[in-house]
Length: 345
Image 1 (cartoon, rainbow, N blue to C red):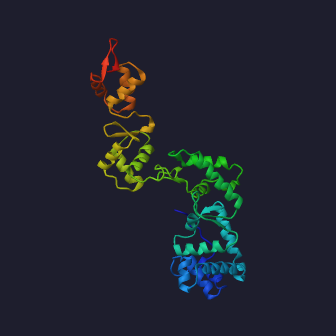
Image 2: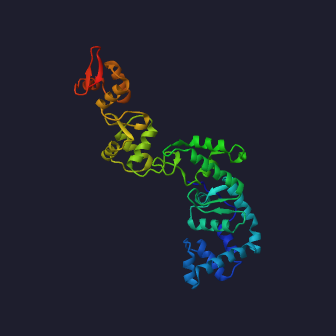
Image 3: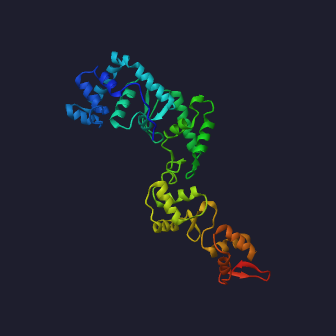
């Protein structure tokens, strides 16, 4: 949640004063386009054109002419301290800020946000960049800084592998490494997190880890993705009942125990390593039941004594030694040589 910023002025009063520089149609077009009336809805060029029985292009001309008229007016010149204050606010937030983030700092109320948005549009110090594949809608007051920050975001993205997750402290450190010559006033966590949030391609999951927005580890969509993040956060094998409980806690999603278990069984990202205990395959645990684990160990290591097999299996599975011994007695899969070493049958 963006921390609210209090301004020395009331935005609705300033926009009303600026709009008074226009004729009635000019006022109405801007009010409709920017949602400055009693309703917060912003009308399209087509909708306003139908109202006046004129083309959308004519509406655009009126809008542009009206903005220009305001910028040339005495009211605009009188509002100079307001624009200076807005510029200082943007600089304090990092000089380049995602539009949603910036407006959220001003107010939770959509109508009030519309008035701030209008003031930013009118103010000649403010540059708005439209949303594209790489970045969200954002505002800046320093083109050089904006270019540098967006270049850094591209570099960070290029260094991430597809499903990699990075702790917030690490991605902030990586960002700082790329912008060592930057003004010290910008080198704080809140500003850098604000810059990171401009990117469409880098995102943060509900557990505070960063990665590519396209990854299910960041943009978790189903029970299996939630389970993966929960087990990864836990850092060691965890019972499926605890996984279900944690999904509810971290993601506010109702996870039924039986459903969670079924989803874990189906997904190769998870390995059953004990009674109801699941680990991540990426941690290096072998897949399969105890018998399969023994077979894979013998394939890799060659003939081994009973003691060595038990030791190696216990690194892969949370089971009793007796369970391993029972499996070794199965002559269909294993045989013992004269030196009491076991082989695959």
